[in-house]
Image (cartoon, rainbow, N blue to C red; front, side):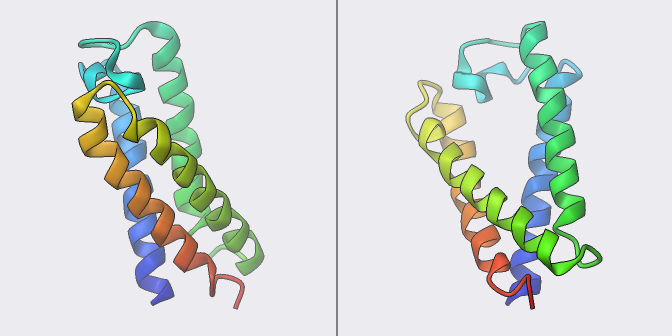
Length: 123
């Protein structure tokens, strides 16, 4: 159970990292991010934020892996579960139908998987 949940968490965070990297590099996906307020390519400041989010998500994938000490893995998975739970709210109320459709279920799924994975991460 825990291995599968960690794999779902790592895969989901990898997807988030890839999406954020694409935004940072200029992919025209503004309608699916940051409230959908920017059609096309994001403005520079949001591209920087996406670049930072890429790094954070990538680090979380690495720390959530099997090779990380269990205490660190549990702490990171707990943080991911909390962050994704919090992220589900603005995604669910976003003005962007695309953002609601993609990122609300993604955030809820990641929160659930990370929470379940953390349960035995310290074992």
